Every structure is written in C-alpha cells, then in structure tokens.
Length: 179
Length: 133
Image (cartoon, rainbow over all chains, first blue to last red; front, side, top):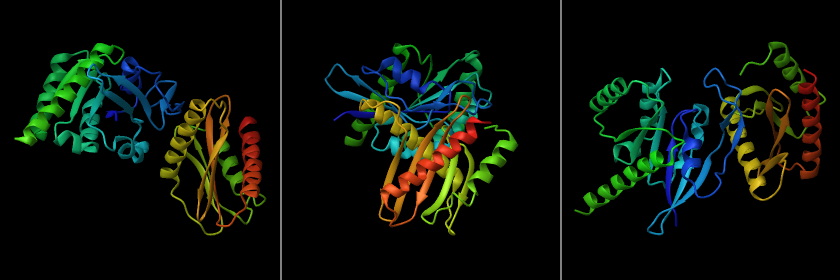
C-alpha cells in the first residue's frame, strides 16, 4: 500500500508543478479554466485534486496528492488528505499575502503541523533574509518548529528534498512514540 | 468572476422561466467550471446552499472529466448522482470565453430517462443563451 503525501497551499503556489516534477506516472489532473484572474493570473486551476506516484529505493511507493488551492474548495481538503503521512505546504513568496497564507494553511492542516508532519517549501523567494525573518517570527509566535526550504517546484531535486525531510520527520516521530 | 450584469440577469430570467420548472425539478444551479456561483433557482419550496454547492459541482465535474479520460472516454458531457431521494445531474457547458457547470436536482421517484431528457433540454437552452452572449 502506498504512503500518502499531500501537497497543500494556495492557488499558484506550484503544487501541480511539484507533483509533475517528481511523479513516475503522468500526473492525473483535474483542471478547469481559471475565471478568477484577479487572485492569480494563470490559465487553469485545479478543481478537485492532482495525483502522482513516486517509487522509492526501498520498494515503497509514495502516492502524491495535491489539493485545489482556492479556499472555496476547502470542503475537499480533508477528503484528499485523509490517511496521509503528512503535508508539504508550498507558498509563492512573490505574493504580498504569503505570510497570511502560511498561517491560514497551517491552521487548515493543524493536525499535521502540530505533529511535525509538515514541511514548507518557499517558492519565488527574492529576499531570503526577509523571508527567513518572517518564518522565524512565525515559529516563535505559533510555537511551531517546522522545517522550511527555499525551492523551485519545477526542480525535482528541490521537491525530493522536501519529501525526504517529511519522511525523516515522520520516522523521528515514530521513534519518539516508541520510546 | 466577472460576467456582465445583463448576462447574469438573462441567466436568472432563464432559470426562472416557468417552462423549465417541471414538477420533478427541485433546483437548478449554474456555476463556472472553477466553482464560482453564477445563479440558482429553487422550485417547489426546496433550498440549496449555492456557494458551497458551486464549488462541489465544479470539483465533481473536474473529477468526472478526469475519470472519463483515464477510462479512455473523451469529451465527458456530465454525470449523475443517484440517491434514494432523487437524482442529481450535472452537465458541462463550454463556450469560447468561459466554461460552466449546470447542476439539476430532481425529486424522489423521478424516472431516470425523463430526468435526463429534461436536463438535456435545459442544458441545450443554457448553451444557446451563453453562446449568443
């Protein structure tokens, strides 16, 4: 049985791109014309889910799910995320409201964030110092120590790094539970 | 989404056209394919929550298209949810500018064939309306 990982984050953060970058199979997409270009200017948007698969060296398989990022699709997020090992939160830091989105999505996937089963990928970072300061302040305010990485969702090595961090965190959590 | 107000008025008028309100139709809803409500009408005293249902209809439509493609079936036209309390049918309307989803809720006991025929007539009516605007 495949280990389920879910990619979360707002529209345009790069979820579909990230899954496509690492999936062994053609990504299963549910895309429709984007009629809300005031929020994000792109031609299509995910309306139900994305799905990809990645085989690991140990023979295990990762099932990669992506949520639709627009908030009116939030009804489907728990359905897509059910039974997942954890989540990878992607954010487009070129958007002025990215830190608000960070807070929103951490709260939306609080069960993952609270157990350390969440890794954050920060996309389109132009001022790394400013972004790092925001992340540190956020960690202090919310008493959460979530790993974050600057990344490009088109680069498979970047996406794989996020997955590895998520899996290592899950293994550590498992070891701590056993002690 | 930004549709011209006059088009929205025409859509609402079309939804409220008495010739559409067959006895077995409880509600009709039109939304964009990315889940934004455009207009809805409730007949026979029924009620729906249009904002939430619009998002769900768009997800269902998107998933149905993908399921059809994965099964080797091209150009999905719509889908049906069968319940003990009646049928829910949705259909896709593609125009040059915008793609839409029409959702119809049919009463308990409705005949499938009759509901499908009725729904397809409505779908064609909306297609004509949206194509001509």
